[in-house]
Image: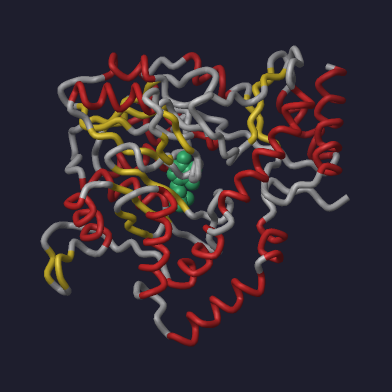
Length: 377
Ligand SMILES: *Cc1c(COP(=O)(O)O)cnc(C)c1O
């Protein structure tokens, strides 16, 4: 059996090696490393893929979230509503700008922000809601957009884990995640569903003037060269990453289908087990399985993690400590938030290897070992 990894970007590369190598060599020969044609072409292709009017590329997904908040004029003293059950980047950038994250509960099934919890958390200082499409499952955007409209709030989607997911509205409209809120943010970190060979990120918007702001802030607040209108930062995608991403974008739907197929295989092995809950797939969603995450009840999770490791199977806890309990948020009163469901989930989730290159022999072995441990305990 081939060795097991959480993600297998190496074997994925081998399948498109010639195309990638040629494209990278062309960039080297062109000497145009930053900006230029390659980056613009990728941005155009990604906009058309995602059904978004504008795509502004940047250096990583964390920057995308920060630049989004800056472009919306969210500043020190303001509040944003976000889940605590997320990767730290979502809320770290708020803190960096002096913006207070107001942590709310997630939905037990989807792991995404609970729309019912949002309205109660709104205060006169609230400026935005930041839903995170965790593990590749979309947050319930229809009620979230309704709440935002009612209270005049912005919505920034953290789409770092769900690129390619499609959300179905009750009127039949279908939109790609990242194109629903005022700004969508994504990451091209190598292990993401659309991963570069280094860092990268992008922002999506339908709004022309917001697009101008995002572009300006990502480029030192420049309106034209050496004229700086607002305080910005330096955040750019380089041309080599852009050509690699352009090639991989053509395979993204096929990659996401491979992830879904791997998830189906796991589901078939674990569904209905009294100690295991398989990932939920809402009907209004097309889950892209950035992670395959189980909830374990009455199982020694650390024991399973070690047992799997002893058998050559990696597994991960995303995330062992919720954001509101991270030390960095002590100063923001993080510990004052009472989020029992978030705590409950962080104590019970475990993610198994999932990627585009899994074969059934590998998956069968993983399932056998998981069940062997769970059933004997
Ligand atoms: C990866 C990730 C980010 C940050 O992206 P980087 O490119 O690593 O900066 C933000 N939010 C979520 C949910 C992520 O998974």
